[in-house]
Length: 213
Image (tube, rainbow, N blue to C red; front, side):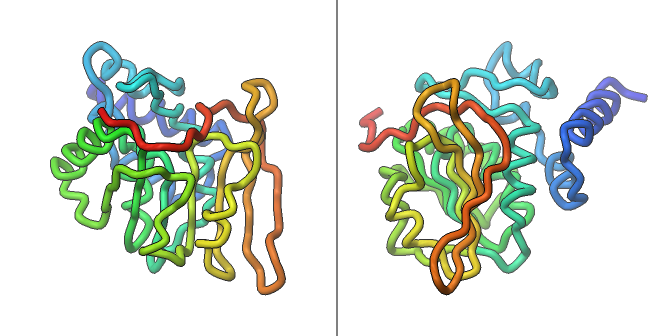
């Protein structure tokens, strides 16, 4: 068995041991090489289940958290998905394997440019990336079937809740302090929103405004 195949096997075993059971999510995680979204020495650690630094002071989430958030989002092949916080582009690439269309937005222009170049390399034509203030979502493209937020807010942002269609699902971390963030799942019904707490997590804060980088 090659080193790469062995790494892949260990990688998938780790995901399963962390509670990732959805075969479509596991297949997407196997198909998308996390190493392509990391630079320099960190690319060698792509198959470790740890968050790693990327440009602009941000991080790429650990694979098990990416997979668990994706699993909780319950994406179907017909779905139009909004991701807030493009970062490295890895999470958007995973979503692109499962959804009809992915819109991803980040306040750092540099991250959007770098992610777009990897999307092109992988021929992921169903992702559209924007440099914008993600806390306001993308009203022009709304409503969305699924929304995933990869930065922590104190509460689910109102504009994002408004852009979720009835029957839609949003998964996001809430809580400002590093110590007390929770991953929650919000489902929109005819009469309002249902909230389910999933697990403790640690994410960078959701910050308003566009960065001119």
